[in-house]
Length: 174
Image (cartoon, rainbow, N blue to C red; front, side, top):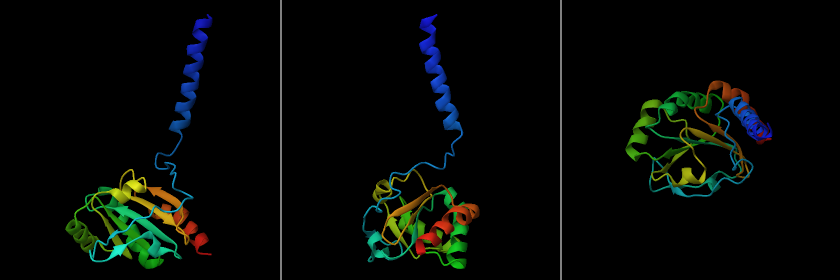
């Protein structure tokens, strides 16, 4: 009888972990970078390879760092939201064209609109690796001191923009 209690106890514990895991939102993967300085880098800009971009260039501003690619299907879903909110609310968005070809990224922006103050170009994906990018699109909200305050995995929806991102941005602007 006692030899069945240990396996039964372990089975009940595993069921508990499963139940907790199934009740979580898979889009809310905790990021170890939230609350820490945005990883430093300096890469060429997509539109002008002679110019570079570094997060240090944005110190003193609250901004969104949006990781995207022309080959990304989900990026097409979120892109109109970024275009709309960049125009209508004046939010500052910097793009990171991730593991893409320069001409493909430029054509994509010409076709679908360009919500970005600028887009950095990450051909080999090193910047994305430093930010812990699981897949595109991913978006980081970075405060005036260069600290990551929020990470959004997957396409930004109008609901996510209104309920999470804009309120956090307004709070950080104070």
